[in-house]
Length: 169
Image 1 (cartoon, one colour):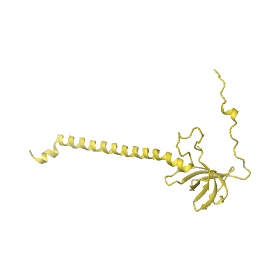
Image 2 (spheres, rainbow, N blue to C red):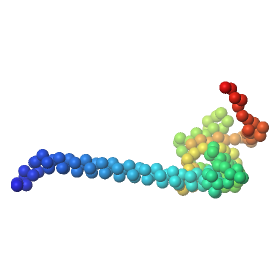
Image 3 (tube, rainbow, N blue to C red):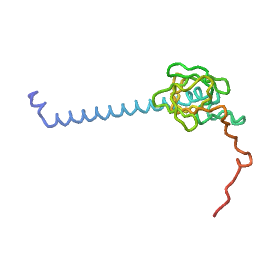
Image 4 (cartoon, one colour):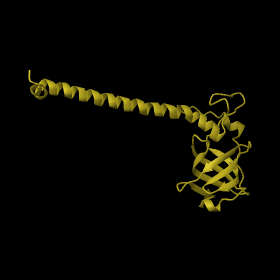
């Protein structure tokens, strides 16, 4: 049999096409496993980073229910203790210090007014909403500055916490 005829035969082309299709399917499968592994790593470490960055309980999400040691779901609260370039250092009410990374996309509000980062000063009290990073810093998306005259929101009234809606049916 002539080798030239083997490469030109219909069976050879079918086998070569099937091998190419198999290689493409295996590459797509491998790409899917890589993406899945990255997502699993992100979600596995997201909880650890969230607790480290936003000061949640050391026991994790389902840790200390008896003492109501829950995570603050709105980000972080603190007072500016240092301002450096595009980073600010805040101290939260428990004394934990956090580095907040500012960017062009960071929205900063003082009351209803939008302000720029250069208007922030040491001693300002802030609410920070952002995204925790692996290095322990927070990429800030939104900052609310509270003035000295601002009063913190009142805690919910205990008599309303167990309110049950009347049966309308």
